[in-house]
Length: 294
Image (cartoon, rainbow, N blue to C red; front, side, top):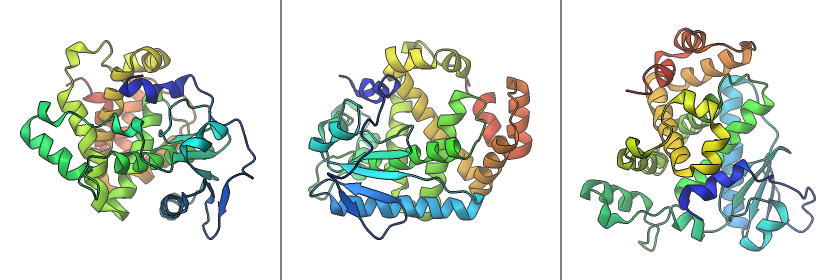
């Protein structure tokens, strides 16, 4: 199974099918209800604290907090609590559960690029950013942060936002992720941004079947199921756009986006949606649509 194929299996996999967590350990002392596999307490404490911090940060900003149960699972427990076929991908399901891996794994390792095939400067950046305490490359820091992206979906789904476009649902989650990291854990910005930058800079657009936002909107499931590398490129573009929106509008941009999508229930055409983003959020948000093909 290839790199992005694993990620996009989410399109066809129903996630949680067991709602009783009696066989897991219950972590006490956090606002986020958390269960973890044997031997995973330290990772569970780290992830639960981060979820608490993210939810608290955004409650102060938008006066809303979602209800989420966090599962931190070992490889042995993974298949008991999710139907997602590959161990390691954070995901949020329809019953308000956020599922993450407790340990490094082959899926994460499959994202490690061949450094000898990258430009020297980029290879050095990858090595510096994603080296673990043993000086081995690991994508753990990136994937641990993707749990916040999935938490972003809990915010907009439970918050009753009208996302207007499928791409906005993904961009929203990335803005929520980037804004929190930039504001509260800025030392992790390289872990969040270097990998998407690598994907965007190393991808030849002429080799992609789909490149526009309208193509993505009209073929969302098809791209996810049949063209995973193509979908991965879109996701990395949204990661970069989220960073640009934060840099331009800071926390106010996210708050304005939340309010705009909360209040605008009627579906808008492209021109009206661009106008809404430009006037009610920030020009940088509108530019995602306006300047996507440049």
